[in-house]
Length: 244
Image (cartoon, rainbow, N blue to C red; front, side, top):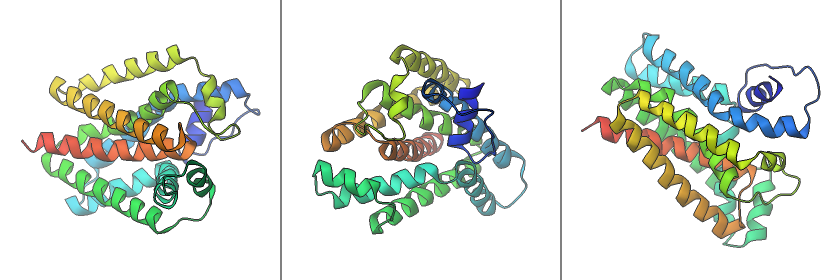
């Protein structure tokens, strides 16, 4: 259970006290539980969207507040750092990595967070109107599956970064977990599942291409940014499909 507890502690604001100092292997194995954490977050969002009685605008705001609160803004921070680095790095690898490590948030980071949250809120509002909130159960899961996909296919560029231990997970285990949880999306209609998984794969391929082209791989910040960007694009895709 230690790897699962590590994943809960790292990916959410749920107060977890580990019984002992985790080993490098336990830290690595915790990544296998990221989709589980996504399902947990999605389950809470679905419950709020389905059973809290508020006007749609207020309810969509409540869903977003719960979403950000549950994650502690962890991935939004990665999105902000990546946005600052991509704009300020001027296509230079070392400058990009240096800016990414800066704890201060610049203008582009703030803009990225605002646009991300605005798009998510608008999409949640539309899902509530379309009575398609079940998709909220799977969007956070697919977002966190993007971390597994990136670690399975892309080198980690920081030797002592937060995600360096995650490289130790056997690639076959990562693919097995992704296939298992990817199949769960078919609990929705098969058309919706195909669209969501297709959008997820295309978005990840594009992100990986951008990350490798600029810095030669991934960092913890770019993985966090990918989670947020995949979630946003997934929500927009679901709304677009449900609207027709």
